[in-house]
Structure formats: structure tokens, C-alpha cells
Image (cartoon, rainbow, N blue to C red; front, side, top):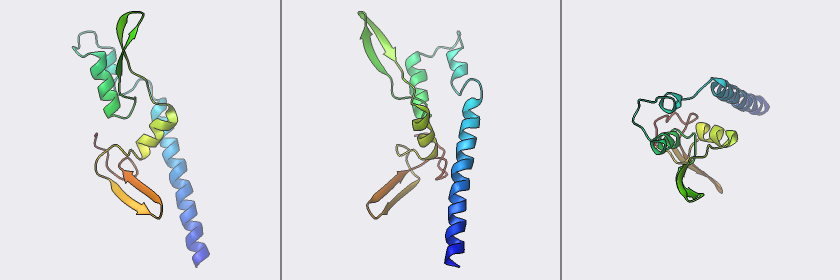
Length: 121
């Protein structure tokens, strides 16, 4: 009975990983993104810094920063790599709520798709 339960748990973990990966990559294949409308709207009065801040709230990019390039101030907004976006989509430690568990030396805290807390930070 113990081997049956262990085998079923392992199968469940494999199904969870494969299905979440498949869903994530299907969602990323959709053209555009949640902020495309704001980026392509010439009449909208929203700055690139605000778009970057919204992208950060959605977990799409790192916080923006002002830099000086060739003597001119430039706002830089860098996207997270795909694996970091995937990890944040699954389990984002910077979101409030979710779970707060310590199992031995492993400490898990955060919220995301797997914990059911989909609200922005």
C-alpha cells in the first residue's frame, strides 16, 4: 500500500509539473502581452516608467531604473528571463498572503498560481 501511495504521489507531481509548464508556455506564445495596448497607444498619457512599474507588479520585468547614457537620462526596464518569470508565475515570494511553511531546513513563503493567491502585490 505504501508503494502504491508513493507511486501515485510521484505521478501527481509529474502531472502538475508538466501541465503547469505546458500552460505557461502556451500563454507566453500568445502574441502581445498584458501591456501591449498601453505601449502601442499614442493618445494614452502613460509614461514608460509607469508601464515598467505595471510590468513589475505583474511579474514580467525587474523594477526600472534611470541611467545616463551618452549624457542623456534614459529609463531602462529589463525583462526577467523566461525561467524567472515561470518561477514567479508559479510561486512568487514577493506577493503577500499565500503560504508560510518551514520543513526542516527548507523555508517556503509566498503566493502564486500554485498557492491560489493571484492578486498583485
